[in-house]
Image 1 (cartoon, one colour):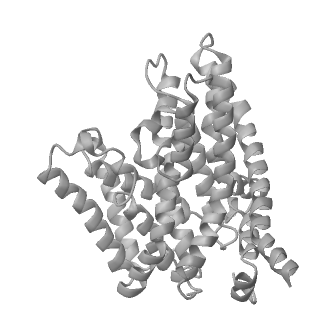
Image 2 (tube, rainbow, N blue to C red):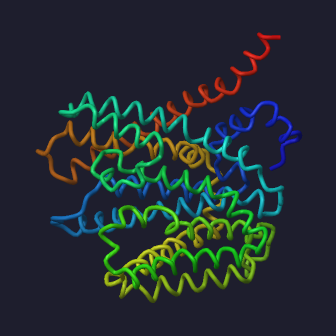
Length: 393
């Protein structure tokens, strides 16, 4: 979508672009790809389920089924990585072919999009954690807050022991933003197919080589598989899709993808199907590659399904997609609070059901509130310097 005078308006008032993004939630609808909204909502639902239900001690077929669904839900993060690469790259590699963004301008827009809501959530839940759980040493809460505030939590395995464990993804998201202009340059210089395949070979091949040459590296790896370079191929695949997608193709038998990406998709689907019997025996990095293949199969099937495109245009999906970032930030702390208050006397399924029907809507409402408040803060942060300069004239 082209906005007349957009670049000039952004230089004069950077809040204009961020307000546009906040108004639309940077959703698929804004970039003309409504199926992205559906995929974002499904990914968030899977992650919610993964954090809500812990496997072990299943007593019925229903519990085994829920455990399987909760396990699969963790791969919503990979779906998010595909989406992030696709959404960021589409204006530059898609049919619009905009000029590559200036690095600092891009960083300003993207970080002001995520940081205010994130910091508000961090302050809120840090305070609530202290009030509810009453830790013996408040200094540990302060250290944890600073670690999260500077996006370092994704490098610390101990963060998985907190009720804000999901915030490790913010470290990865910040890494994607920091590297995107550089990766985009590589895509423009080498062409998307060559750039994506090169990054896959370098990142996954490097991890495999490390495992062969240093078999004792694993205990010291920390969060290696939760950060770059291990997750960069997922981001790059989303970028390649942005370049390969041909939305104007109207013929049903013809896929709206270029030939090379269609062939790549076929290989990924075959790997996902044939690798199923061996999935439990796979070690890293093959296990990660297989998870990416399975997640991509699910992603591309829904991305190309016409019904999903129509579903993405519904008001409910759009609202949930807009709120998905805030829901991601709010859902895990809220679920732990509800679980803490309900205690351990309830049946596990009953407790999970009560948490879901109460904290699901609560996470949505809190997400919308945090986004609105952070939007006001962002707008004020950009406008105050202008007011200050005018007062000095």
